[in-house]
Amino acid sequence: MGPTTTLLLRQEWDHHVADSLETWRDRFWYRVGDTPPHEWTLRDPEALGLPLETYGRACIIEGQPWDESCDVFLDENGLLADLLGHHPASVVSLAMMSNGEPDHRVLAASAVSLARYFDALVHLGGKLDIAEGGDSRVRENARHLPGAVYQCPRETPRGRLTLTHILDADALAAWMAHPRFHMVK
Image 1 (cartoon, one colour):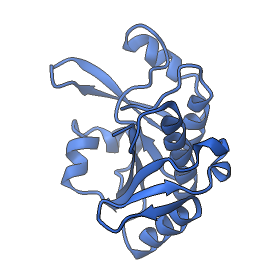
Image 2 (image 1 turned 120 degrees about the horizontal axis):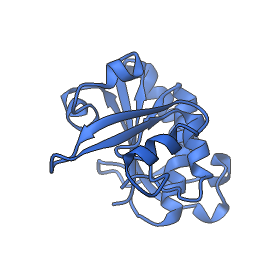
Image 3 (image 1 turned 45 degrees about the horizontal axis):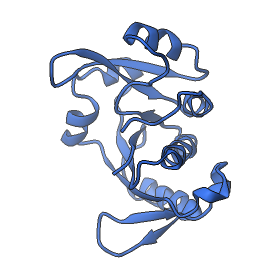
Image 4 (image 1 turned 90 degrees about the horizontal axis):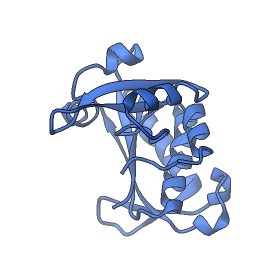
């Protein structure tokens, strides 16, 4: 499995949101196989601003309402509503099936496109690797990205305090152009 990310939507999960996700997905991806979780293969990389050689990369794309599993994996310390000014109503998760550099770019470009499509935020599931050094250097460098950058403190399983970043589409697009770019795995 490769890098993953989750989009945080304000919209409640209903047939309109599900249909919108399907419309977006069918524009860029085609389904492979009939057994869930459904794997999707990149159909049109150039429409996402990616080089043609990224054609055929595989991804799992799934949407759902916000539920207890989201609390555990995305808001483990209960700070999201205060940090964002609202609580997400639903999520769309993207998981690449491989971990090469092109997979990180496909994931990010897909997340930027979906974030713009749904006016959503992108929960990276970890911190940006934007600077060497500790979290204070990461915090400072992340502030210089254009767009909205939310820095959510979280505790690691070993009890160490670290960050999780949540970006809007503009900040993620800028992160893609950074020399240290990669998505969280």
